[in-house]
Amino acid sequence: MYNQFVATHRFKGKTSKDSPSTAGMGKVSAGGSKGREELKSLGERMGWTSRELTMREIQQMSADETLWHEAFNKDNFERAFERDAIAKHNHAAMAVWDIRKAWREGVTNEDTEKARIAGDQFATRFPQFERSLPNAELMVAYMRDNDLDATKTESYVTAYRELNAAGKLTLAEAKSADTFLEEHPELNDKRVPPLIAARHQREQNTAAHFAAASAATNESSVTRVVDFGPQKHGIPPESEKYSFRMKVRAMSADQIARRCADDPAFKAALDALG
Image (tube, rainbow, N blue to C red; front, side, top):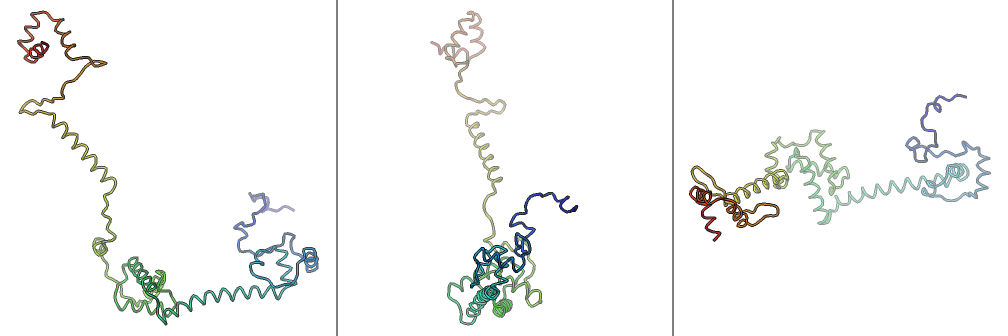
């Protein structure tokens, strides 16, 4: 028979055990629905017996074994579910009883500090909550009457949302961001942003460069002369005296006399040769 779903379904392999498509579904026997006699015969082959069960054992059973116990060990099978439900209820109730005891008999200094921190964290996250005595009394009464743990921030959030929805709380006046930051200096970040720090560093490096250049500069009203000190030329650099001496040798006496008359620095360099 032609099956349209199979023909158009992209995935041809076997669906994985933990596939999302089967999440939350009950166990199904690999061999399909088995009758009572078939389950009985399977139980005899597998050695399954009527006995007391735990939820852990049931969760680890195969589908066929689960069906066998449900059919041939029904009382123990159902009692396992009843015990598990009672244990879960008692665990939840114990937490409520502990909270009620704390509200009734008081708490330790450690829990008092935890409650103060939780309340402060809540008030910081909800600045619209007005920190006033009437509001605090309403919050405490709601948490006490509804078995909420005062050492947890989420308890304050729950109380605030319920009381605010009922219109029982007084809200704080709206404040600007600047005003809010003034009242909460711990939120002010005084660190220099990385981009600003980099810009300041570049400015300092530039200023240092010009200061070094200025130290080697002689200024006048018209001409600026920069003295970089003696410089060598050539590759590799050759002696300045040797280069100057060779230059002088290539000049005639008349050329040397005219150059000395026109260029005092040339004359001084020539005299320095000795």
